[in-house]
Amino acid sequence: MSASPLVLVVDDEAIARKNLVHVLERQGLRAQSAPGGREALTMLENTEFDLVITDLVMQGADGLAVLARAKELWPDTEVILVTGFPTVETAVEAMRRGAYDYMVKPYRIDEARLLARKALEKRSLRLEVQDLRRRVQDLDEPATLIGAAPVMERLRRTIDRVAPTDATILLQGETGTGKELIARSLHTVSRRAERRFLAINCGAFNDDLLENELFGHEQGAFSGALRLKKGLFEAADGGTLFLDEVGEMSLAMQVKLLRTLQERTVRRVGGVQDIAVDVRIVAATNKELKAEVEAGRFRADLFFRLNVITLEAPPLIARREDIPLLAHYFLANVARKLSRPTPVISPEALRLLSSYSYPGNVRELQNIIERAAVLTEDDSMEPRHLPPDMVMSGRGLSRLEEFAAPSSDLLVTLEENERRHISRVLDHAAGNKSRAARLLGIDRVSLWRKIRRLGLE
Image (cartoon, rainbow, N blue to C red):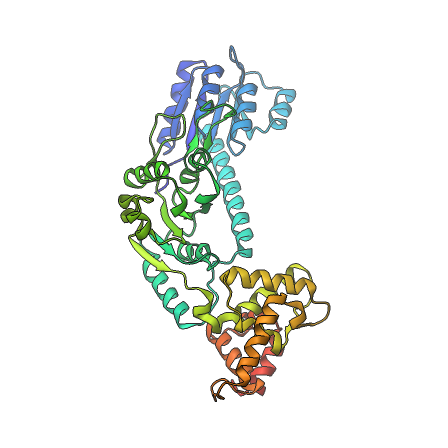
């Protein structure tokens, strides 16, 4: 359960300050107070408040100074000014600087309650809109595992079983197999789906930068730390944190990560306070962590902490039958981004794509399709649009196949190949023809005609 909103009351009149704190706490809010502007500025340096209610006229630092600093440090914090001398100029200046509203002393308790509630509702709505925008952006990286191969069906069933739990997940697999996509799928079907999914590549940072990214820092913790920064553990509170390439962490960072996982708390760089966090961890690696433990490069206690449930991301060659489906999916996405009609993949180009070894796995296939889509000048993707090494290796395979014994399973007509492929796509889309058409890169009417022609009704 998330904590109730936190309000800061700033007033140099002790009775007014205490009364307002009492009113807010009776409303179910958490409230802290400051006896003046200077004290409020200090508190703002270390804490993000949902709402600040501040007197305008105070010694040292007035309400406008508190307003300006609150908005500078925490742009989403709402501020209400309280004044005993209301003027049009005061109201205009307060609104220009970002205040939500102002109250005139002496104010009624009901007025203070109502204004605080509306300000907090506005903040909550703004944060919800920001979250929706992030989730809309995430649609370009869909949390849907594409593929109808048996190994993918087994993976999806396992995800459905483990996602509702809070168990830590360790994803193992080669580079480019889509481990982050699996992590996103776990998050999407978990009880944490409404909260944030954040990811970090642990191998992309040195120790100091990685610690700062994960745990954040206090203002003044080091040269250049001009303001407080929350780390990813705090930012993902209530959600999921994906630690990619966790096997690249140094032993020193492994100790700090282990402490956080054990205690369920983080301590910012330069800080002395432990901050409780509720985060589901999904870690990934392309290394064999058991071997890393035996070699002394990975802590055994951290390995056991991460290895609660292990999932394997299959290489693309283990799900070769999914290559046509993935190729059409990536091609349709690229065509949409380029505002072009989706090209058709010629039978020879599809054969080359299906027979390639893909050392870079799904990521390599996606890059090949994106490159080919840019080079395709008409409505058909041909072998000439594919990388030369793929074409050469495919031609070598064709020459070998000339001497191979014919197989009735391999030698099928183009019509039969099309029937099988469309049938697999329809199964993957659970019979949803609109979705199947999108995956195939054709319109729904064209798919309907193919279904009737191929006898798939």
